[in-house]
Image (spheres, rainbow, N blue to C red):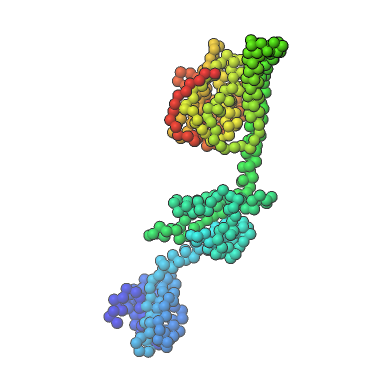
Length: 480
């Protein structure tokens, strides 16, 4: 008994019939703190049966809870060495009971969310087998959770027509603990749907080994369709803009083609004159010279037509390596006649050759033509004497920067902040779509399009694009 006297937990000694025969100071203090007159108010409601069963069976009965005011008591009934007495001992488990109640409530809430979300949440073993999945699997995959368990992910999702490698996904999970990818369901069919799947590795705390993978799969079919339609609209808008540009450059195009055609006619007439005497050495050399000139001018006219056809050709937007120098050269060639008409010289300063960026060459040329034509117009409005537009390329870390520099009056802060916004234009006949469309094109290739005033006057419009080569800068100046 002296041990129980010093026990910090309440203890009652009960007879076999449940009568309280003794209590320790901790029990008495608890009675006083809870203002309970009798011990029975602290004991479980069926304490008599519990005491009798413990004594008769000679075994302990544990974990019998009794709520008293704001306290939760967990009672144990321990039989004595000889029959006829039972020790009832309590522990205050209020804090633990609150935690368990909160945990049960959180578990119910978690289950409610999991069971009702339209995203499929799944658990996987490290080898890819499904451990469990939320009911949304029936909607997304046509398989209920019990049908997915122990099946490998390759049995459920088709990776054969996808560029995604399961080995690559596993490597990402191993290295970074996270991976996300987009996968088509029923690829090539009319009912093709798209899933976006994000996975997170769960690691063992001490070893760092992956013990489980949790994934969330979402149906993004509508988003993919909207993005596809947006791309088609952008391509159609770019095509219309190219046609509009062609209309404005018509006179220049006619001049570029008429010049070699006129030369071809002159050389052909000369050849006809020399033809009767073609067996003589002198006329034969002139005839050969004339035919070579005809070939050269024919190639020049063909190049103009080929360049125009490429510019107007409507293809699916590509994302491939493009030569920086060729983009600049083609854009300058298509802008040359407009520059000559306004007494503006186009000059280029190109960095090292064979620099490449990723994008669509035709769309990038379209952006550069917009910038060059705006620069020509700025020069025309501000400068009366022969002026110059400089097209310069340079490298900035992992980016290639194309700058179009004019000698105009520059732009105020309000214009600079709005010039790339849709439908903003300071021209009386402008629609305000050229620069905004150009920015959308460059943004789509991971680049930036902007402009700033120069200290000595003029405006610098620039286009930064991700660079594919890492060669150093080698200046190579050209004049056109």
